[in-house]
Length: 202
Image (cartoon, rainbow, N blue to C red; front, top):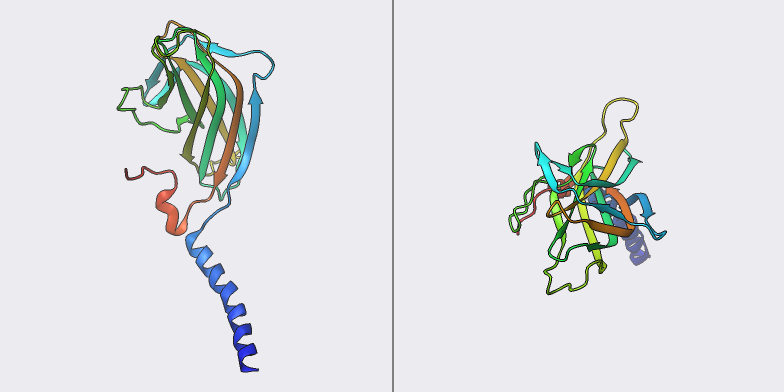
C-alpha cells in the first residue's frame, strides 16, 4: 500500500515540476504564418539592379515577395525562409537577397567576407569556369530571423515581410523561379531570452 501511495505521489508531483520548469524556460512552439509559392507557371523574376543600402536598410534590387502576416502578441521572433532555383545571365555575376520586416532589415550587418552592403547576403556566385553555360539553374536556400513586438494602433499584430533580389554587377540580370517562402514565429523568452534572434558566439 505504501509503495502504491508513493508511486501516486510521484505521478502527481512530476507534472507539476514539468510545468514549473516550462514556465521558467518560456519555450514556445514554432507557428507558421505564411507558406506561399511563386513562379511555378513557367515565369521567373529578374533584376539588373545592384544591391545598395541607405541608413543600413537594404535598398536597390527588386522586391520579389511582399506579404502581411498577423502574428500573436506573445511571438517575439520571426523566421523567414526562401527556397527556390535561380541563375545568373553572366556566369561571373552574383545574386544577392535581402529580407525586411516592417521596413527594417532582418540582418543589418555587413558580410565581411565579400564586403556586402548592409542587410544583403550573396547566395550565388560562380566563376565562368565553374558555370560554362549561362541560365543554368542552381538551388537557393536561405533563412533570416527577426526580433518583433506588437506595434501601436489597430494593426498592432500585423507585420510586413519583404524579400528583395539584386544583381551583383548592376548590369547583368539574375533570375529566380519556383519559389517557396515560409514565415514562422515563436516565443523565445525566460531563460532563453538572450537567444531571441541575437548575435551568437562563434
